[in-house]
Length: 132
View 1 (spheres, one colour):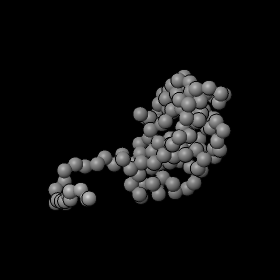
View 2 (spheres, rainbow, N blue to C red):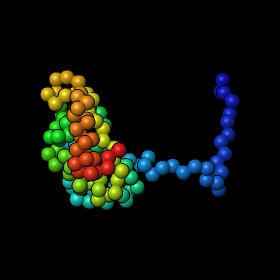
View 3 (cartoon, rainbow, N blue to C red):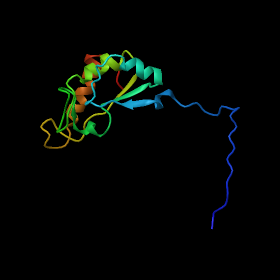
View 4 (cartoon, rainbow, N blue to C red):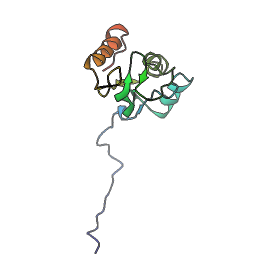
């Protein structure tokens, strides 16, 4: 037996809330060649305003200093600095970095908070990228 029927009415003449442009974002994977020309402008044309590096589940295996992943392919062009210089900065994108808490540099144990702290220091104090 079907349940009660409901009717939804949308009044498009009123604006109740504005969604932040930061919800239009992308995860950027290290296996993708981020140095391809036109990438930043293509993202801008689609409304992308926020990027996450490295995006997705591979972030738990990513080591920012050498751009490597434990047991996964990484494109040699897809370094953190190339990501910032070739995509994020030209596209005026906001950036969130995803620190690795899954693996240590030897890929045989849990992540090291010192690696994450060194990345934040490098990004903001040495390179002045303004990462949040």
